[in-house]
Image (cartoon, rainbow, N blue to C red; front, side, top):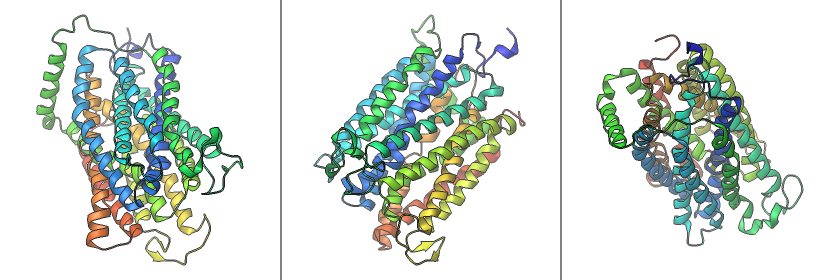
Length: 471
């Protein structure tokens, strides 16, 4: 066996077909509508504006829900990763968490306007779906280094993220064209037709239906992964393997400070991915509350962000292979810091801190600026996520990929409560209570802590080594 036949994890790639590669990438296509339709553009805004009492309260409740789901993910991801490394195959785990995602998202259909007395259970259902999709991603990411050589790992990660963003565009287009009204009370979508399947806009059927749509989408499009992508072999002896895996995980955690590069990278990604998730999680709620956008405007914003995200992921993967993932991550974080500054200094009466006259219509100066910010968030976020997976592979030991990506999930979730918690606290306790601001102004204050999280992540990157030029 020569070096060209070895994957990034040291496994033979002889049994990895093109179908196997495409099957693995299909996971990102299958999972992306959860993030595009539910977290960022459609359901989160609908929950805050129609299910919760008001947009600011909705932002607070949504923040606490994301925080709790993040804490649970952080606690369990490395443990499950250690168990999976010990027992071998990852597909059974992915199947189980796919089922969890499908059940949770399917239940979002019951999120009627005003809550109907089940608002708490809607938040629980969304949290269950979120935990499912996050855990499934941990095990899917761990398979990636088994498929191609390290030299082409960035390209594979970038292509998969790009395919995922394209899936997000298609799902969002379907929702806008076929399911939701172009404006409240219009009775038709932007195609000029009534919402399909008799979706009643009085009870916001189009927005509620994105939950079941996400469940069906995930179920169908993850099938190629299970059919064609190779999995790890089952070890000859499992007896005692789980205990051994957990002991090894505990040893890794104890000695983690001695591995300066890994320790710094986990810390860096902990903060910058938390900030990025904060942007995704509150972007739709923010635009709905501050700019008063409806579902159609948010959908167009989402299409633009997803389109540029696909370009950013694809280009970021190629730049990763050429310059290394660390440089791609650094540039992406700087762009996102600038975007956050633009967002928090703009509303209907203010453009980049400068007072402006309010102009009617959907394309006033603040709207245009926010569309530009969306394009930059998509491109920089796509490149950032692409490079983050490959830089994690550079820090991991062979044979411990699931455990490593469990730690990666831990770093992404250990403070995942921090961004939503800070947004909730700065919106409520600081903006509304302490400063006595309006809902719109309080939401702007609530987003500002994300800038600090990005900055901390950028500083910690200084101590991180990568495969290309530094090892």
